[in-house]
Image (spheres, one colour):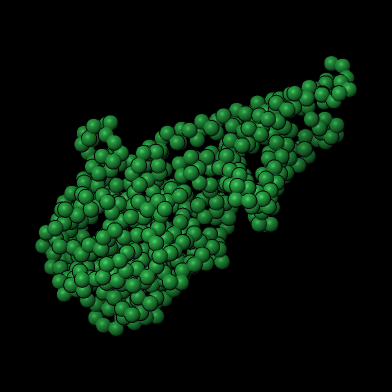
Length: 535
C-alpha cells in the first residue's frame, strides 16, 4: 500500500491501514458499550439534558467516556488470555445490570445491589416469571460481546506500535489492567458517578463486603402502663395479596368470623424486604428521613419481651437462613425462629399450628410470613386447576383462592377470641397488568402498595376500632396499635410511631429497595406524604 498524503490511512510496522477500518472498529466498540450501558446512559445523560441539567449530563458523559476508553485500551492490547478474562468479567457485571434493567426498568446502585443479594433466593421463580425480558437481556449481552470481539479484530495490533514495541508484554499487561481497574477504585473515592455497567457490580460488592456490621437494636425505655389487653398477638404477613384480590376473593369467606376491616391500606414498601423491615422495626412516620436507620430501632421483639410476651417468627417461604434482612442482632432477640416452607399447602399447615398455639396459656407474640402467591402464580395451585392458556389475572386469582382456602377457618377453629388479637395484611400489593413488573418496579404504581388490613379482636376491644373515623390507613399503624394492646401507653405509641388504627395514619411513609444504609452514616430510600403512595 502506498503512502496516502490525505491521511486516510494509519501506519503500522508492516502495512498501511485504512481510516475506514479504524472507524468501523471504533463504531463497533461504541455500539457494544452503548448496549450494555443503555439505561445508565439514558438516565444520566439524556434525561439530565432533557431537564436542562447540562452540567450533570456533561460530567456523566465525561465519566462514561473515560471508562469506555479504559476498556477500549484493554480490549485492543491485552493478550488473548487476559482478553478472555476481561470479557468474562465485563459480561458478568453488565449481564446483571441488563437483566435487572430489562425486568425492573431501572438502573442498579449500591443500595439496590444490596437488596438484590437479599432476594437471590427468588432467582429461580423470577427467571420463570420473566423469561421473555431475561432472554432479551441475555440476547443483547451476547450481541454486545460479539461486537467487542469484532472491534478487537479490526483494531488490534494497528495502533500504538511505536510505544508497545518498546514495552515488555508483562509491563504492558500490568499497565493496561491498572488502567482498566482505575475508575472502579478512584470514582468511589472522589464521589464521581456513574460507574459503567461493565464494572459497577464489583465496586458495589466490595462496598457491601467491607460495610460496617449491623448495629445493635435500641433498648426499650418505655414501661407498660397496664396489663396487656390480650395474651396472644399474631401478625399474619401474606405475600403479594392486593387489596382488590382480598376484597373479591378472601373477604366474602370471612363474614362468619366478623373481622374489623380497615379497608385499603398502604404498605410501607412495594418490595418484600423493605416492607418487612419497616413492619418489624416500627417507623416514626412524622420524623423519618433519608438518614433514619431502621436497624437501630427497638423492634417489635424488644417491646413484646418487655411486656412479658415470648416471641416467635414463622417464615413460610424459606427452609434455610432468614430472609428480608433479618440480621443477626435482630434475630437474636427472637425466642423462637422457624423456617416452615413446605409446598403449596404451607399456609394451611401454619394455620393449624397457630390454632394449637392459640389454645395454650402462654403469652405470645408471633410474626408470620405466609407463603402467599409470589410469582409464578401457576406454582401456587394444583396442576389442572386452570387451562395452560389462562390469563395472568386468572392465574393470580386462582393462586389466592387456593392459598387461602380454609386458612382462616383452620386458624380460628375453637379459639377463645377474648384474649386474642390477630392482624392480617400483605407485604405489598400486586399490579396484574400485561407486560409490567407486578411489584418492586422501577416506577411503582398504587396497586403495588394497595393491601388489605384486617383484625380479629376481642369483643371488648373491637367496638372502638369498628366505629373508628374513616380515612386512609397504613401498615405503619400496626406497630403502635400492637404496643397499645400490649399495655404500653397509647399516647406514647401514637406520638413515637403513628396513630393507632382507631384513626387515620398521620403520614404515609414508604421505602424503596435501599431500606437500610449500606454503611454507617449512609442514606436510605424513603418517601412520605399525605397521599396514598404510588402514581
